[in-house]
Image (tube, rainbow, N blue to C red; front, side, top):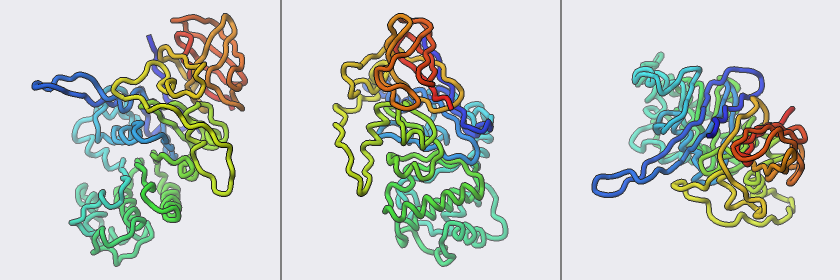
Length: 387
């Protein structure tokens, strides 16, 4: 038996605008003449998150870990296999077709490729006012609304009758941003929104998004594989690996003191100009298939501590605040040892911890160096940092 990990509420006590609880998005794999389902690709497999108004949550991880699928599922572009999605307190899965259509005004997306996401047969006037026409929100005229939107993203009105191929990559992404904010949404999924741009242009687009967030109180889910970019815009970061969030917390805390070994590997891979860093061994092996993910901790086949590769069943309840991470715990009577903790808020590898119980199938509470969590089956722990 496993329990569901609740989403971690951000600081401030505000009610979440977006709340996910044990969300799963599986894609069936079919074979044979009758298209029999023989398995599922578990792109998103039990994610719990919360985002409040005006907040930016960075979602990072390597390619194929499920980041984009998670964003598309929140926006109702991919159907969930199970789990709960709440938007402003409403369960999206229980809404009628008309209610979902109205809800789409409040949630938008900025796609990764600024060229392929714009219709080459439409000029910029048609592109940025398409949503306004669809929902009957044109005010004085389409030209006036489009000019206002373009000016908000730093473009001139002379762009109205030009086509996407006539702009640079940074300008095209500004047009994408203008289209996304045209309906005055509350929530925007930024799917690798700056990864295809030059570094200098990335900074311009990120500064634009920060200005719009402060002006309109937007909430962002900022998806990226680049922690250095996320650190400039996100107040919190969630690290995803093979369909699950393995660590979540304040950005500064995650960057300065990562707890999960996968997060540490991601941070070590970020180049720092002018800084000579100790060469770390690369992660061994390939990412397991989402068709047949490994049991327990999905990172354990590639864990840099081979003598500490332990796995059992998923568990655990989580305290309602702080930085969250998942790691293995090896009980030994009333004392045990953390298997993959980090320095700082939680004791280093192998630091002793106390348990109230131990053994397979027993739910136990652990406390070590200011970290507290719950274990199930004696192996998997979900814990939070205390402030």
